[in-house]
Image (cartoon, rainbow, N blue to C red; front, side, top):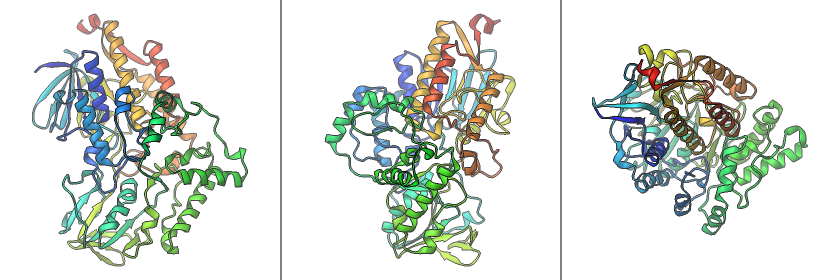
Length: 545
C-alpha cells in the first residue's frame, strides 16, 4: 500500500479545501468519498427547496481572489443545485478530482503505534495508509430516521430528505405526507405544496423561522459588493457572532458594540426586530445583541415572531400550533424560509399536530394517528441528522492501544478545540464538536480549521516532529470551557440536536462552541503561537526509539 501524508475522509467543502492546500504545499493525500461526486451535504440533500441559510456571497470560499470574482451566484440564498455546481467547479478548476476516490465509504481507521501511521479501510476492502488521518466528514451527514412503528410497511413512495433520489420526484396529483418541521421540512413544504394534490404536515414540535426575502441578485450590486470582498471576509472571520456576515456594499466595522435589550425601549426593540424581519435572514438573531443570553430579550423576540405567525396564518388553531412555546428562540438553529407560514393558507395543505394526536404507526397506505388514518400516496421523512458525531462514530476509529473512539465518547464527545483527541495521534476533525461548527457560517469555520491544521503540519515538519495529539488535561479543560460558555447562554434550554436530543440514547452534551467564530479564532491562534500549547508532540528520534 502506498503511503501518503494524509488520508482525507470526505469530499465536501472541507475535503476539497484540504486537498487544495495539500497540493499547494506539495504534500501527498488521497480523499475518500462515499458518493460518486463532490459536494458533501449538497450532494446528498437534494430535497425540494433545499438551499443554504447563509447568503451566497458569504457562503463561499475566500482562499482564491480569482474564484471569488469569477463565480456568479444567481440568488441571495443559493439553491442546492447551484451550490453543488460550485463544489464541482472548485474541484475541476483546481485539479482536485484525480486525488479523490469516489464510491469509497470508510469503514475503519486504525492507528499503528509502531509505524506511526493510520490505516484507513473502505467498505470495498481497499486500504490506504497515511501519516495523518483528517476527518472531513461533515456535521450533518448521517440521516436520522424517526422511531415510528411500521415505516417499512408503507407501500407508497417513501423518500428521506437527506437521501433524496438523484432523479426527479413528481408529486402531481398525489396525496403527500411529510413528517418533520425542521429546516428540511420548512424548506420543502412550500415547494411540495405547489405540486401535490394534498399535503399533510405531521408536526411534533414547531420551529421558529424567519423570512429569507430571497430574490435574484442584481449583478451591478454584486460587482459593487465584490469590490470590497477582502474587508467583508475579514469581518466574517473576526466578529463575535456566527460569521454569516454583513452584506452592505460598504463594509461596516468588524466588531461593533451590540445593541442590548436594556439599551432600548420596547418600541425601539420592536423596530429593530421589524427591520431585521423585513431584511430577512438568520441575522434576525443579531438585531438585539443579548437575545441568546437574556431571557427577557428572548421572550420579547419570541412574542414578536408569534405575532408575525398569527398575522400570516389565517386559521387561528393552525397559527397557534405553529407558534413554538417549548424552547427559546434561536436555541434550535433558526430556520430561514420562503413563504413557509403562507403555505398553510392553501386549501389543500393541512397541519396535523402530532403532539396532541400522536402517530401510532405507519401503515401500508398511510399514517395512523390516535384519532384517524391519513391516506397517503407519498411519505416524506424530514427528521434530521445524528449531528456532529454520527459520521465519526459510524467509522471504527481506533487510536493508541486499540482505544475505540466510540468508547472515549460514550458519555459525549470530548476533544481539544474540536480538532484533536487524546490518545488519537495525528487524527484531525474538521469543524468537530467543541468548535463553533454548526453555530457558524460553515465556510468560515472550514477555512479556519483547514488553514490551522495545514500550518500545524508545516510546524511539525520544521521542528522534526512526527506525531501530535491533544493533551488529556487540556482536552478536559476545553470540554469544561465549552460547557461553561454554553451555560452562559440560553442554548441548553433548546433540547435540540446541538445537544444530541433528537437521537434516542445519545448523551446530552452541548457540542458546539458558542462564543463565536472571532473569539475561537483568537484562542486557536494563541495556542499555535505558544508552540501548540495543549498538544503533545513527539520528535522523530523519540518516536523511533
